[in-house]
Image 1: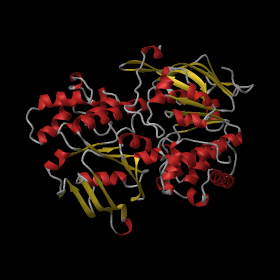
Image 2: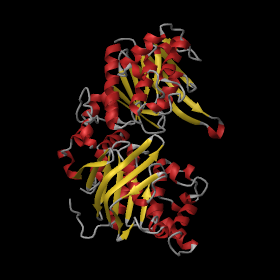
Image 3: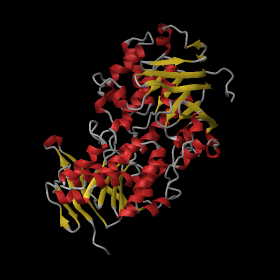
Image 4: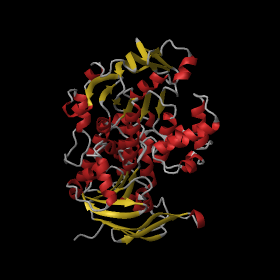
Amino acid sequence: MTAPFLAIRNLTVVFGKGADRFVAAEDVSFEIAPGESLGLVGESGSGKSTVLRAITGLNPVTHGTIELDGRPVPTPRDLPFYRTVQMVFQDPYGSLHPRHTVDQILSEPLAIHGIRDTSDRIVSALAEVGLGPGFRFRYPHQLSGGQRQRVAIARALILRPKLLLLDEPTSALDASVQAEILNLLENLRREHGLTYLLVSHDLAVVAHLCERMIVMRHGQIVERMTAEAVRRGEVHHEYTKLMLEAEKGFSRAQPR
Amino acid sequence: MSATNQTPLLEVEDLRVRFHLRRGIVDAVRGVSFTLGRERLGIVGESGSGKSQTGRAILGLTPPPGEVTACTMRFAGVDLLTASKRELRRLRGDRMTMVMQDPKYSLNPVMTVGRQMVEACRAHSSLTRAEALEKSAAMLADVKISNPQRVMGLYPHELSGGMGQRVMIAMMLITSPDLLIADEPTSALDVTTQLEVLRILDELVAGRGMGLIFVSHDLELVASFCDRVLVMYAGKVVETLKASELRSAQHPYTRGLMGCIPRLERSVHPLPVLNRDPAWAE
């Protein structure tokens, strides 16, 4: 057994106090091995994004520990953490600065981390996500949704991280563009030996990209399974069965 | 393609929607023709294919500076192109209605559910307030809301997504319309809630013998829900097929769209991508 790259133990995230107290994630524990890809599945409000945001330090950790490569992560997260862990958000329309060119968007992480060879890094980061150098001085509104998500992925990759946190990276995109982005993520993972933690409400997308998945509901983990088991329909929790059923689409076949 | 019914509910011939923008003319819909009986028709396409604009144009909801032209646009014998604003207002919300994508934006946030429903109901009938209230409660019960009295006292922000969309459907069906245009009615909902809402919609549409136009980006979902599907690309209908024949679709766009969706039954790496042929838009 290899040592886990990321280990979450008994993570609990609580928002508010008193009557407003809301437990968004409760006693969540899981591990990801280096190079592995894990999916968190659930519907809105299940706490899957909360866990992801707690890892990056965007949400507070009320209880529990997060260990990266064997060491607890510092709070607030430091620069070496962000060099190792980067995040791609759901909405490529909202996550890019509308008045910054692609060049400015991509040079910001480099400037923060004091990296010099900005120009070369930007051109190669764009090439990695399948965008030519011609995109470098465009604004986000001049790009399509898929191109924007490619820029967001390039921004995450430009620091050469090892772990990528993907929060519904394709749910705002058309099916054909989704296929392109999923293929890109798969290739990048293979080429760079990346580790993925993917959050999605779409079982098929998670099964496509990940070997293992965790189903969350009301802030808690209800089932852990492999993608293979899901493909064979071997799930045990009632809720997972319901999701699997829903995946097949609408049917009038209730009475039959 | 002939309609299944003798007298079509809706006839659309050569519908065009065009926007004169600063950056030039955008042809959102370029010559769409179809007839609709008392059936469920799906309109499918990617963003920008003109599917939503088609639905909006029928109701006369094209946002300015949009310009709608057509050879024929007839609903239950009324010519929608020459009808007066007054006539259109009488039809809209009464005999033809629309359910939009997100209940969060289509319900009035500062009015309780009950008040909005009573308003919708009384705008098209001479019912008293008490009668309208009673009808609203019955309609909410029809969309499987277990405690209509309580829900009528709530504001939209107090409803969950699935509940909000059910309220929306109840409000749109309260006048017993002949035609319902549903624009991505379940895309903002979770998969499990999505099926519940669809089941309710299906029962109501079948039970009342309404015509339904279901606009969606989700080909599979539409095929499992509708009788017939129009596939749109770049403002045109590229293929019309029976929902049951989706698997044997002919057009490369339809086939490409089906192929690029990851599925649980089969694992394909990498996923096939759509190679767009400029000829499809011709």
